[in-house]
Length: 209
View: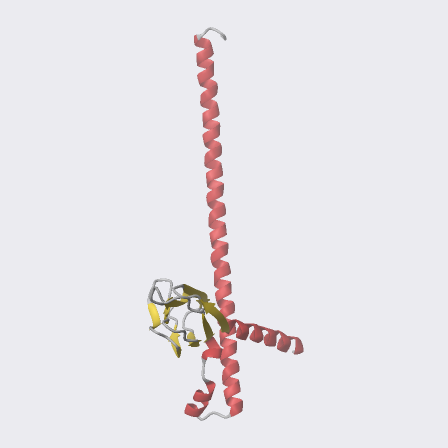
């Protein structure tokens, strides 16, 4: 039982670490920088950003999926929050683009702070407790229940991916086998044809009987 608790705690910690992205970087003027992350289906994603303003510089924020659908956009962004729920397992892109008029001289790089959470960490359990009038222990149990469900879903997804990869490998091996048999038959047929052709040629030249 103790080993199970340790395993569950390690899995929970790993999941929480992967569900929180906190990053700070500098964006040069008149440049674009994007961050990408793969997120599962039906997952709540929340984020908070802060952009240190510089004179004569405007920064736009856009969040899109792999199909180019815009999930969030903010022009002249400085500080704010965003939230959306994924409709499918996909690669999501968060892009910051700095714009500044030409001839403004040298402008310092902008510092951008971004905090993103998804899954269990993105839920506001304090608000849930107020709405449903839950006790602290009940809130913690709800959080653990959601965390357990997320871990189970992750394992189910990994199992599905493993099955898909196994099917792909088996299909590839079958195709390679058939191609090898076909190539061998072609080589045998070509060798047989060459033998008969050379034999007729040598007979025509009366080199063999």
